[in-house]
Length: 257
Figure (tube, rainbow, N blue to C red):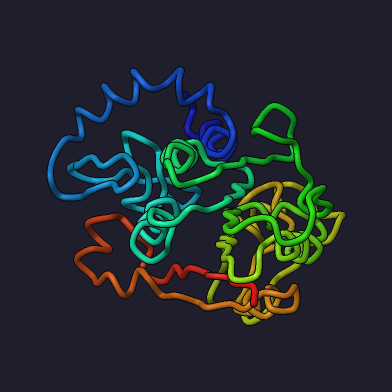
């Protein structure tokens, strides 16, 4: 497959298209044998390799797992969920927005989790849901996972507020977004931007913005209490290399008091 085409369709393959994963499993398995080794370890598929593969418009090194196609953010999130939260130990009502196949597969099978996946597109999750207008009562979910969704939504604050509304007091949410730590303020797009301009400014042709360091403040205005956890740094340089993580990528751990 042409590399530029794959880069454009990858987000849909990764987040929504279970069909593509099932269809491609034999190919991915055979390909991963070529990269067998013990230099890096993917916590998502629990396999060792010589290296992770480059990926992205700028060809980030050590980015994508040759077996399960996890990226740096998925490996960081799964490590965090297992090691820093109660995901594996308590009975939880969990909402997974625009579920990534590799995370859905791991989480939905946990015996302590009452799992609900949701997506704006029909037939891509258990329920169809617009997260700017969630048709569920207040205080219903213990956990909400929503990764790389808000940057696609024009009214992202409304989505944040709705997610906070349906989270139980004492519950927690991880709302992961692409974020440039060099930006003090989020760079918002206008409706007249072309797909090419959006890709240049925001990293993808259908992103509405690039978040900056004010993301924490935005979440707090929506009602969350936010802890910015530099978990990758906590793991140390050797583990950052071993797991193929971005050292400056933080986890925004949101709670509702």
